[in-house]
Image (cartoon, rainbow, N blue to C red; front, side, top):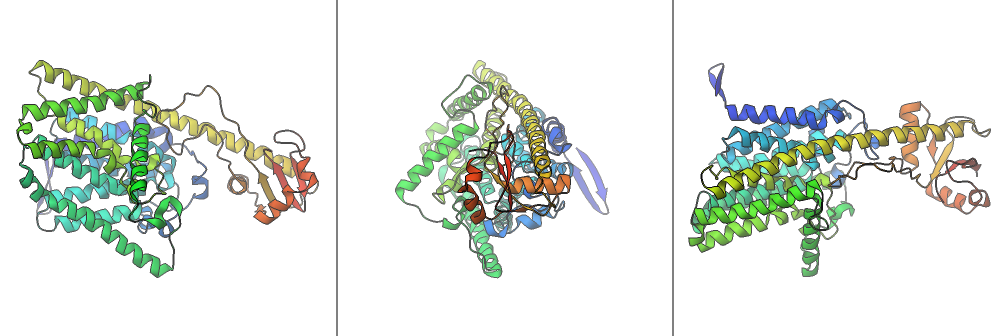
Length: 508
């Protein structure tokens, strides 16, 4: 523990904080330095060299302001450094809240958080990654303040949660799962009576509900202020009570995506990631049973049932957005709350001592599994960025080749001609390792999905400005004999001048 004096105030830095902070940066750089120090755009980021993407129109009223903390540019190292800083503060807050004093466990906690697939997916969208991970910090801070501040903690937690949701609504699930973990800890480790725990935990329910209501109120004011209607995208415009059938479908989606992020989409597979996660879930169950028996929690039936129920509800809490609208589709970007199952494992491992043979086996296996997951995630992160790099070079090469063919046409007069790209060019690389889990934002193929992707690359990378043809003009071209007789890229004759528009046929 180190003490610093600033004016008349003494600032205490605990060794546990320093271990968590430094580990986050070391493992973070091992996992993500490839991304931080290279320009690796994807299909979405080339629209957003500046800016953070859609804000008010998707109900993310604080996202634009959160992005201003760094800049409005897609700056890999700057955004990445701020993201690591936010994650490191999350680690410090959680080690305090759950009283994690063991430095080895703090190292594992920091390492597993910073290498989790959701972080990799966030870094694929680097232009907004720092803002999303600020939402992770705010959601964690909401629970932490509710826990440690007696008088105004719940109110402060509501505000933090509302602003986290104002950046990205899915991060509300982090707060939900953290509350579930705290409830489990109360019953299994602190051995609280059921009614005593309920009285203590009502403030967390108030924080969660109050934060969501505050978010909704600010959203309503924002929509009125800017005269905006929420779209159907991801069910944002249709939040509310669903039917029983829709809740059943939401539960099925939840279990599917929970298995998918853990590499068990089709059950336990013969793959390192799948086996490690299956072992982690098994160990969580076994350690829970061991602690319920050892701490005699089974004698308090309500407490035992509540702790088991809280564990089973973790997937529901992690995918709670599924239960707010039938049109929600979960992506890797939205699944940071799933990472907290490893925090639960760490919390329970701390209760095991190196004394009895059963606790030795459980603790040793738990540490081995967590170390294996960290190692796998770090390697998998680098594979992801390698694939992004390959995708970038493919995309630039294809865009340059198409531009050269256009410029060689006799009809090409100036760079303000209209152009339309028909279809996608499939150029998937064979024999690349299939990633597990599948991470949104990572592509083995090019990210040239439509005409705008081509024209924006030509503009930014080659200084050529071309106008896109309209949808009606494109439909007229499709009906012409000239188009039907065109060859498909990369063959000769794949670029033609039809109805005064440059046409590139990428597929039938």
